[in-house]
Image (cartoon, rainbow, N blue to C red):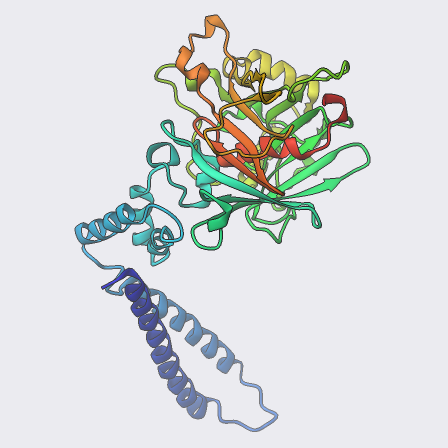
Length: 433
């Protein structure tokens, strides 16, 4: 029996159970209504409402018990483990990968087993759940994606797939971004869906913000980083008093996880843009021998972060202050953040016959553009980073058609971080070209 047939049969079974319970409860309520609540028209019997509410509660509990005691939830653990292992091993790419997500949606026991079996993108090279977009990519081969730009709506859509020609069949929308121009800066709001860019929504994952000239960008994550000592609020200077922090009203946070700097080109010399990316949330030890990058396993609730901040503010220090200077001091005092991973442009070579700067994109980029780039790790001699790791392309981005760009990323970057770095290339930079 196929997985779709199993899910279809499970849905039918739950519907039949709910219907029988509703009919049974309806008959009992009718009898009790006729037996105890048959009074005059002006008589009010409060017992009827209480009995009705108790009946509805009992029906809801019965439905939950029936769902928990269904034959799908009570499968032997060995058989359940074998089923999900077979599905996960056979469905390696989208859209067939939806079957793995369907297994996690059956019930709690199926979800727990599926989460144990499904590995991170670093281990298996596949994107399954939304949290995979915040986890580092594979070490061996990059994950190939492409970005579609909609000029009319100023939106950018990141798809998982080899080619946009196959977008209707095998590609999957990973992230979407909307460009918002402000008086002094430009913002790219990043979301999990393409029609909701509100920061109050659960689909909000982060944003990218530029300075006035468009030469510096900051990447903000909606979730606190792995190392809480590098967290920062989106405002450069903000004072929070205990009464202002309410744990009952959760709000989307902004944690500075990366900084992108484009080198000024005042003399207008020939060559591609020069950029440098400092990944505050990834230590340089991640690419050292035996190192690992921070890997979140679930989305953290900002409500918990507010509660912890509220508990701190009730102590001896009644005022919590976040500012750019205090953040710089924190970064300097923390070993992991002081030695953050730094990415730089891979140096191109000048082709005499073509009269242009060239990089080997291995067939993934076909149109010359100032936006094209390849990023590699920039390490000092004392950081003990192998030469092979320094030459490995961690992120490459390039144009293949009108408003179509490819994006290939690998460990230690995540899909969200790579997408944010590529979005910075779409903003106009007259001082850098």
